Length: 206
Image (tube, rainbow, N blue to C red; front, side, top):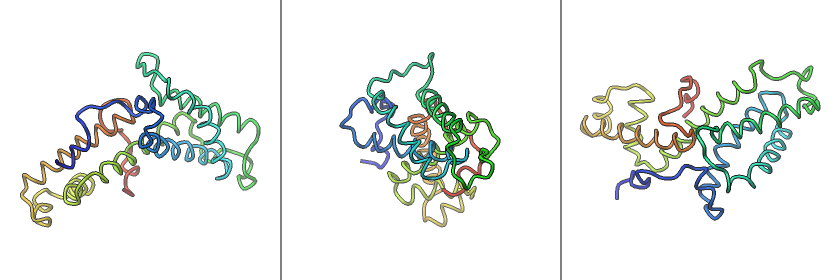
C-alpha cells in the first residue's frame, strides 16, 4: 500500500463527515482548521487573547449543534460563508459592546480592513497551512522533500534528484502526486477545486 492510498480517490467533505458524531478524527480536523481562523480574526480586530478565546467558544457553541444537520447547497451558499456570517455578527456584537482589552488604545480595530476581507484572507491562509500539514504527515520523507524543494523553494528537479539520490522522473512523479493530494485536501476544506490563491507570505513559514 502506497502512502497516498491513505486517501480514497473521492470522499465526503469534512462537513458531511461531521454528521457522524463518533468520527473523532473529523471533529479534530474541524477544530484544527476553524479555531485558528476565528481566533486570528478576533485578535486582528482588537480582542485580547482571552476575549478571543471566549468568542471562539461562543461561536462553536452555536455552530456545533447544527453541524450534523447542515446541508451543503452550492446555490444557497457554502459552509464557510455560513460560518463567516455567524463569526462577523458575533464579533460585531462584541465591538458594539466595547468588549476590548484595555491594552487596545482607543478601542479601535487592530487593522482597517473590512471584516469580510480579513476573514477571507485568514481562511484561505489557514486552509492551505492545514492542508499542507495533513499531506506532510501522510507523506514519506523523500516524497515531501521533493515537493518542498521543487514547489516551495523553487529548486530544479535535477538538483533535487541528485541531492536525494533519485531519478529526475521520480522527483517529478512525487511532486505531481503531492500536488494532486494537496488539491484534494484543500477542496475538502475550501469546498471548491484547486489550491487557495493566497500571497506567498501566507506559506513562508511552512
